[in-house]
Image (tube, rainbow, N blue to C red):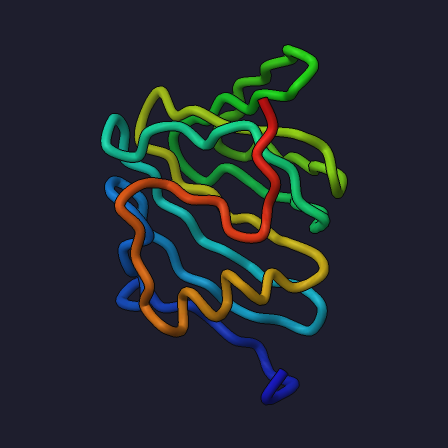
Length: 133
């Protein structure tokens, strides 16, 4: 971390990730914070996948349906928080516009690099994860 002071991600730093998805990434000391905006139907779904990073988050706007490899589905709405342990297969769909803040531990260096370089994808792609299904 460059400085021990509070950092922010201004809205003007929100950039396209893939069709229907915008993001802003804030690297931290041992964590990566990602601010996501998903706009269906263009955003599509996040396929079942798993990664070595623990992932926690909070829904700020709209709703998200979290899916797990064992068939469990949970609909989360504003104010709902979630935690996905490392290497647990999960995916998501978006019945409406959804704004989410994810926190990954340890750092998702590949997300930090992709954001810093402004790399965009033609569809949602999961970097540094293993597809499940």
